Length: 325
Image (cartoon, rainbow, N blue to C red; front, side):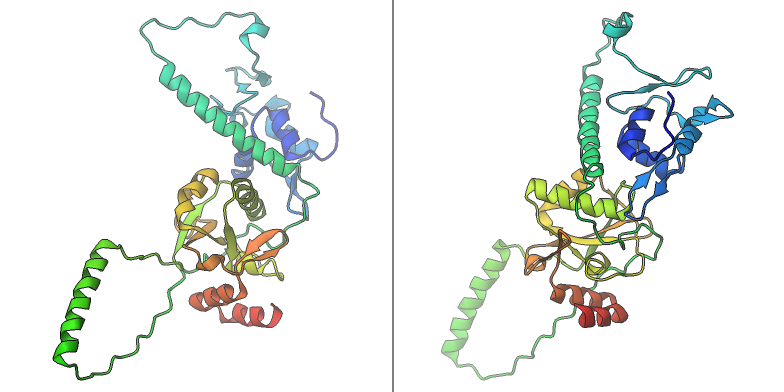
């Protein structure tokens, strides 16, 4: 294939290599293929970079071509020699017969699992392609840049001050009534479980997408398509109002009952604070009050932002928020 001397989009490069966008992003993360990042944050590829991935001294780089690829759609077959990668064709096109299976060997479970994996891969790849093609969508703040930075500290709950109860004299009749009421309250406590949800606790995850801007856009699209509520906070929320220094961790609130949904749809895996790029905070509702929409993204209210900044002790950024928002 003769490539033109121009910039290629991620979707075009994925089609040229015969892999999915997710696989192409893995190559980029592992620095197997170079790219050019535009000011908008999107990645483009030159003819030289694509050929450099496939060839060295005029011959294919075998370590760059994955063995036993599990990508859906077009797949790359790797020969033991130094031949160019070929697109796998169906048996009806090649004319070769499929190898017969052993009568005692059951392939149904493996086939079912492979089909499910391929369906999931197709859905994710379709989502990535739709995001790649949305060139007219309003740009998200340039400060969603994936650079190294120390992770944010876990938010701490502000201590509650309980007013002391003054001693008062109680008559025998009142004492009897209080005892009866106290027993009723104790029974109620046994029946109704207490809500121990800490809405300032951060759950750290790693999301396998390439950069924070793409992750923010996927969060918005996933929420809009599935009628889910979310809200960015801390650096991720503040950066939508005015520029910040580069950061590497997105904090956002979700409903406590939606945690499994987000873990599945964003392909999240639990992570240490050093490796995480997402900080998820759970709420039963208060964090979603008075939400703001900035550049098409949902952000918690100024009061919640300032409360979170006080909790992490970021007084300098707190002062900026008070003056600029």
